[in-house]
Amino acid sequence: MQIGEYIRRAGAMFGEAQALTEGARTLSFRAFDAATDRLGNALLAEGFEPGDRVGVLLPNGIDCLIAYYSLAKSGLVRVSLNVRETEADHRYKLDDSGARGLIHDDVEGAEGFGAAMVYGADALRRLIDDGAPGACRVDRELEAPYRLGFTGGTTGAPKAVTLTTLGETAELSAFLMDLAPDLAPGDRFLHAAPIAHASGAFFLPALVRGVHQWIMPRFDAAGFIAMAAQARATHTFLVPTMLAMIMEEPALETADLRVKRICYGASPIAPSLLERAMVRFGPVFAQTYGQAESPMVITYLGPEDHDRVGSCGRPYTTADVAVFDENDKPVPTGERGEIVCRGTQLMARYWNRPEETAKAFRNGWLHTGDIGRMDEDGFFYILDRKNDMLISGGYNVYPREIEDVLLAHEGVVEAAVVGLPDEKWGDRVHAVVAGRPGLDPEAVRQFCRERLAGYKCPKSVEIWDVLPKSGAGKLLRRAVRDRVLASADTTAERESA
Image (cartoon, rainbow, N blue to C red):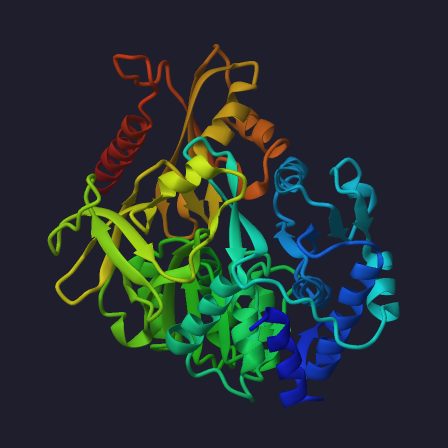
């Protein structure tokens, strides 16, 4: 079934019931269906053709969701862009995907992005309001591109991930069967994380179950607590960083919150944080593990299994998961290897990258790049990442990109970026540099702030005389991390003595 039909069916089933609330604005299920029809019809009337890629760069909100699902109805391929990324990030993704259009709330800010047709907030509102009424229905093959996500390689260059209608439907089924099977009319889902990122994966499951969804334009801990109480939220999704901030908020002590399910993922969670959160909220937590190539769906850990500290759970019903050695053979139970998976939820391919696609898919299995193990009960544990990618606050961070910026500083000669364990951020971005006399760590951080998205900027900077290298002259990032951690342990021992 086409994704647009889920929108249409929800409109017919739930009618005038409240579907979406953003601030003072609320839309019914029927009104959301009609708005996506009008915008879809308007975009086709503008000259777009099914299969064209269209970027969407909008903050969390109702208009963002209208844009997403008007594209689904009109057969256009969504290129989701995160407002927290830089202009250079946006331009790269639009160019790489060959986007013909861009829906953006700031037309002037979108100049030079390369898209032929750019729609700002006023133009978007006119299209939504004035588009032709009536069903917008463009059927495409279920294995044709539906949307493009982005990930990165070991060098940090993002790769476009081609996701299909078939894969989107598999993700929807997995959520409703395993992760959030209790969603029902009368529930209220609070979107606090970016809809362009993981939180958006919960929109369709909640919509088809008649759930009223509330949207925070931008997350802050106090605002989350207030809105969760106001909405009487029963469900939400949080990355561990958000949960850490909420747990530190004084208002949490007296807040009247009645959340039945808190889903989390996108980065590892510190056991101490999860333990404190479970004391406050109860056994309501469910973890999901996935990646861009298998969006959100590899394994899940339900509330009843949260006594298994460090586990990312068992495979989703729709996913087949295993642990392979370097020869792509299954390893014995309990031994470490690379986590691999297969199923209809997987990407079709990397966009215009056949060699990378062949490397990721070997013998029918997607190789995740995550090192892990499986216990005798079928629960999986992620032990490390095969490459050097970090996950800070739920966002992928690639050391090479940050190192390139550091090396552009006139005082920096060598640079290594590593992730340090952090209860709040998951991975705390830490930079070690060697350079000319007088190099100031705070000045280096400020240099990065002016050139990188906030979540990519180093939280701390150390200055060394020289960085460790292999015999071939290759920077040994792991050796840098080990030395930083050893130094931290030594300092902690001295302070406790």
